[in-house]
Image (cartoon, rainbow, N blue to C red; front, side, top):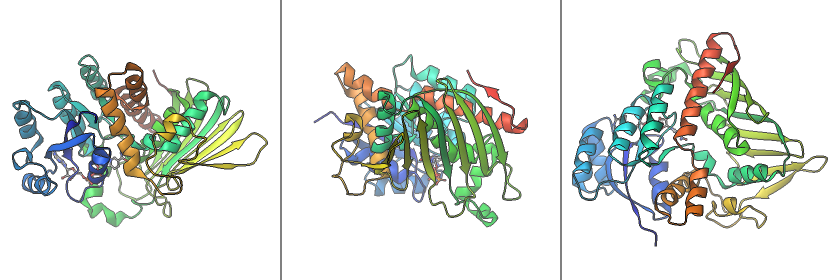
Length: 380
Ligand code: NAD
């Protein structure tokens, strides 16, 4: 049995959106012990919830600074910390724990500014700490299958990718009263973008993940379609990638009828691929001039990286917590594995600090482009 890592969680309190998927993912493979947490902006609620989840009372903290100080003083401190708080707090918390020598899983967007993103990478890399950004959809087996097929050249040169993360869950102005929604449209708490930085960023990461390419340039249009919003609730972005691929991306929070709305279609010279998050176990594959086939998770034809990313037999539904768990398992491998090839393969699949920084830079470039009427912005 692999040696377990001591894990702590910041944010993700009772009723939060993303806390529970992290907790399930971290325990799925028995690789982490949940030993400490500062789960809520309200200290007492956070302590009570952590205790209810089985965290020892003396490590159920009311505040992340209190947790940092107390953990540092222990002979057995947390080794990995997940930051699942609102965006504005990511940088300060992630930086403090990295500096204390812990590995960090940070929610997206990694930071509010490009300078903060670069500074987190600059802290993590020389210290040999892993900084993972939770682009958790890259953990889905069939997304990994798409990446493997493209990397093998089965689809030929990728000419075009059309990606979207467009949902309809913020389509009503009345929802502005909901505190879990309000921060997402407040520039002071969210930064320069809402729909793109909140949802579209996953689709953006996925384009880079499956094609293996970095963004070369982009042009964007942002609109606030619910009156009164200071940040966009609908964004369209055109992109050029360093390997010559073009992409179109749509991010939206007003697309009523789209339940989750993360979809990607890849058009290569030799084949087309499509994957839809609401049908995560299937990859659609169409060779040029041929019929579409459905490639099922769990089927014998899968690449090794897709095969090992699944847990259940073909036909049994498998979803988001398993996808997130693949990131936690890869992180464990990237930290603990002694076989260098296996360790490097896991790290290469993980969305690490540099990809998090690239996505932050892309969001800022898109906001700048949109403000300038769609000017093309080159990216480094
Ligand atoms: P939420 O508003 O539902 O929950 C935020 C939680 O953080 C609450 O429990 C709150 O009490 C707690 N919190 C706030 N400030 C804190 C602090 N200083 N210390 C400790 N706890 C604090 O938000 P959410 O939807 O869960 O989003 C949280 C983060 O996760 C955001 O950065 C968001 O972008 C990201 N997110 C990622 C995904 C994904 O698929 N990767 C999905 C949803 C949200």
